Length: 123
Image 1 (spheres, rainbow, N blue to C red):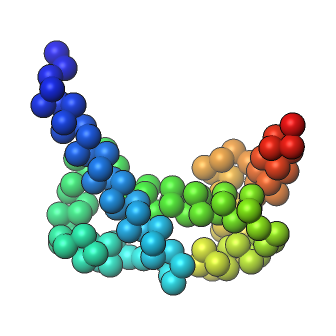
Image 2: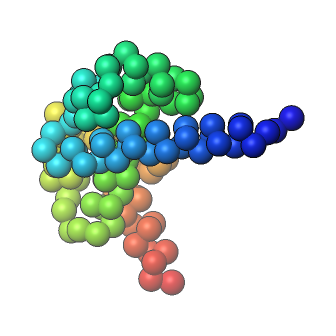
Image 3: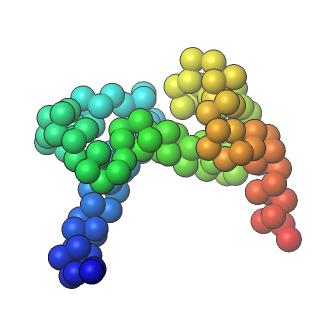
């Protein structure tokens, strides 16, 4: 049975995960933020952050990967930067690591993604 309290808890969960994602995205410009930096930004211990994310069926690494994917997607679609420039901007040690991570999430290489998405927006 689904109660109003369950709905409120679910909303709070989404809000918390959203706060973590926002904190990650805000810090991706300077460097890849650590769990400790995000916990500090949210005024909680690293362990509390991990525990809370686990309760919400998420993890720091999953949210970081999602944030990196969102940022990469925007850069691919809204800039003329090449894969090497984007991988550097997102703090990957090697462009091949970026391509592999992007393909794991999207099912397409960054070049395929750019071509498919830009092609769809022109229809």
